[in-house]
Length: 127
Image (cartoon, rainbow, N blue to C red):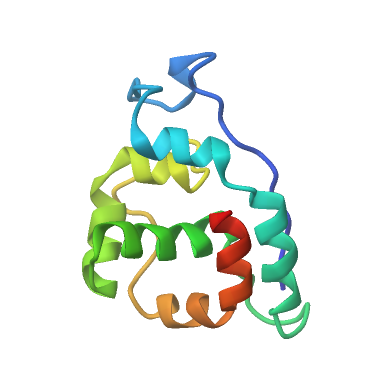
């Protein structure tokens, strides 16, 4: 099952929204969050989900974001998850409303995320 969530904190308008940290609007992850065509990626992501039953799917921002972080930083799946836990900028990139070290994520879903974004979708996002 997938539930669309279009909310994205715009902390550059009000830094207190991404509590308790004030983030720099010039950070690379903040800039990247603004330019990725999330709606295009979400359409492709939803097509690759099997059904509307079962466990709720992770958001497109988390799924694609994990793959982007992994690729950009050349990390293993496990190290990608650790970087996500430790970095509030990356959590902002994923659309989180606040920094949480206990973000519910482990390395096992990353393989499923890769299957849900075919090469043509990744190419469109990169354009």
